[in-house]
Length: 193
Image 1 (cartoon, rainbow, N blue to C red):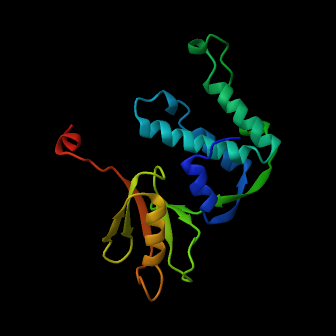
Image 2 (image 1 turned 180 degrees about the horizontal axis):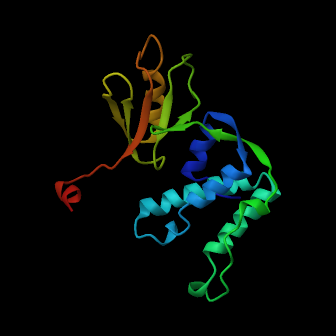
Image 3 (image 1 turned 30 degrees about the vertical axis):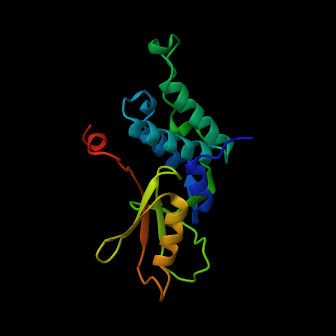
């Protein structure tokens, strides 16, 4: 049984929308992808590349032409002298059927991923998730109006309950809010170093 990652959990809670992706759209996404992100010294670049590749892989799994295109791009970027084999050519869009797939995609913005309301409150205000893991300390911040911090919480589950209450009407009364992971330092030396 596969272990559910934090991102998997967030995606399971995400509000989704139906999107049509054409083979040309997918080709463009593959061209823009950072194929060598896993070789970066930056963990942020590594994580971003891994997340993006999982999105591309999920889209490709919907159609054999998309799967073949992903494989040919992968073969192109991971062949040649550094890998000790013959370099494969970059795929050409005209060698693929003009197909499209309909996928359910999470609603995302600069504020993170829009999550479904887990609580009992009925409202139209939104809770966005921009957390990196479930166990980190979290801030809940208003993202419209005064953009003020509503509170800090010991983990994501507690932060979600607060965020849900914060956007409820008439109790909380805030518009959209975002939950973000924060690093907590126990000493000045931890922060300074």
